[in-house]
Amino acid sequence: MTAQKEIEDLLGKAAAWLPKAMEQVGCTAPVDVTSVGCKRAMRDTLALLFAESYHLVRFQHEKMKQLKAELSSTKSQLIENQKWVISLQEKVIDCKEQQLEAVQTALTAVKTTVEDSVKEQFMSYSDALQENVMVCQPQSPSLSPEVLKKVVQSVVQQEDRSRNLMVFGIPETEKENLTELVQDVFQDIGIKPTLETVSRLGKAGKENTKRPVKVTLSSPSVAHQILSQARRLRESENFSSVFVRPDRSEEERAQNRLLVQELLKKRENESGKRHYIKGGTIHSVDKGVS
Image 1: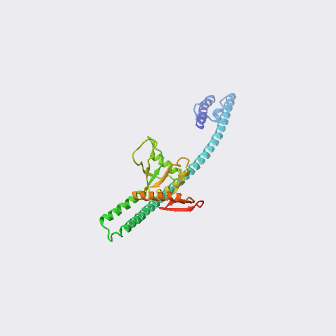
Image 2 (image 1 turned 90 degrees about the vertical axis):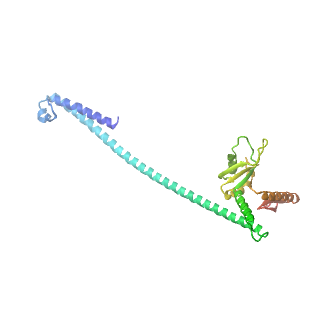
């Protein structure tokens, strides 16, 4: 039974007993219930009224003690709830502060990344422009607009390619999710880049073909990071036949083919050494030397 119900029950018993007691002592109104008025009642009636009033008062007393204890418990619970609410509010404030700090850190990191990327691309652009100008300079002491235009176009194309990668060896299927496949390859070497565009090159041929995949990334630095880890694919359980290369121009591809041919000759003629291509040149070391 709830406290409210017990109070209503107590009030109901008192309300029913009061008129009954007045009637038994011969009183018609509460003001008539005096010591003088009660003397007119019979002894048996007074004894009965006394017994009923005693038990009623005792019952009220017990209920009052119970209600007092419940009230004290309710106050304690209310205080605990208030403390819990305050603690929860403090946690919410701390969480918001941590989220704000995390957002500020992320914004700072993004700003730094963008600045580094812009700086890197600007330096790359400047270096490439200077290199092209130096190549053209011996032929003509003054650059014509046509030559300068070609130089700039070459630089722009080079900058565009610096964000691209070529992925070879990914099998083709009719309803393939190419972006997801490329993401799986890069995640296998511990990198999760943002892919701007992903497409296969050339016309679709027969079944079981593996046309190369051209991938455009967000910045040259991301492409360089993937290239630096691409060798780990040789040890991959799922992508050991997949390899990643830079997106080279026609001239670069021709130079690379010559390097590969020279590399094969060295491996045939100098089998006692280990030969590899790095930085556009062939390096040779004794086998067993890392």
